[in-house]
Image 1 (cartoon, one colour):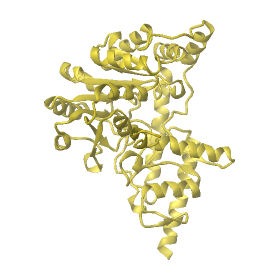
Image 2 (image 1 turned 180 degrees about the vertical axis):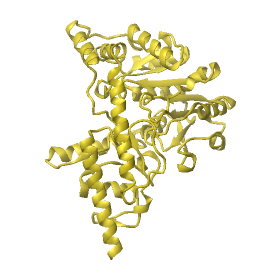
Image 3 (image 1 turned 120 degrees about the vertical axis):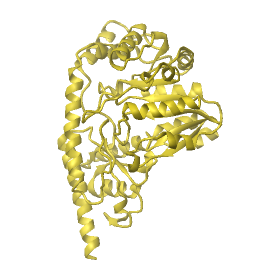
Image 4 (image 1 turned 90 degrees about the vertical axis):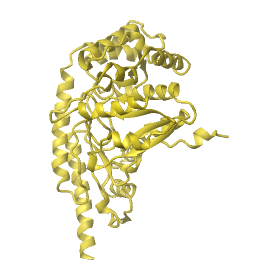
Length: 403
């Protein structure tokens, strides 16, 4: 009954784990959820007020498929002010979240068999979106030796006559890596050398630490801007995950195609959400600075705690987003919580069932020797979750040693 495209599709592992954790909570089980990439902060009052005003004013009808002109102008102002990028409103397409923007991009760019280079560890939906769009994901594996960063040499080895584009997530989910301008320029020049498009997912751009800053790929040079589609949104920076609001900026032919595609899919983002996003973007921005400081406090705490948890090796210190991504291969071959551990999937299952902490196995991100822990939760929950993991792993290690 189902077509081959549907049969080849894998569910989102992060959403599946979050759903399982919430099911346990609904059953009265005390679960600490460190799996989901969702800020625990509330949407700024400016954003909420903008949404409520839209309802009160009757702004509840269809908008242009690509988004209201006011919101696209405000996004253009933001890109110009903060990223050094000059995009007109007709080069910007507002969508139902950055995930939707990415899906639109792959749908309008890829023909059957076109290849997209994707760095591993990767965000879970990149390969699936490429496959849904008829393309072929080509995974480039990185590791701690290159600080989980792509190099031009890695890219060169994976380019073929079918390569159409390369997808970059900076700052990175799940590793927290932030590329500096020199590294980005090297990637951009390699892409330009082979005539590749660049899809630059910058959804975590405002969540950087230790002096790191997110440089927009399209700001490298005018030529790189012409071949780059910049993706961003409101979910992370403005804690507006449930509102579903993202955007992409690109050359006019690509933006036009994305808008036309969207007109046949969703008819555009919610009018109410667009007003909320406009108000958040135009209002007081101090909430974001406070949120970033709190995330940094939790990040530093998680880094220190992982030093004392047996079997969890944080090889690369994250400088962006809100995740830590330790190597857990030291636990392979052990019995933890009554379960034989042969993979990060086994370990995450044991931690959920025995310690009641939800985290995501690295296999979901193309890196089966790792797992992802989110610190987008309260310090209280983070501390309790890491306590439980430490007690479970330390206890089993002692047991294995004594036996």
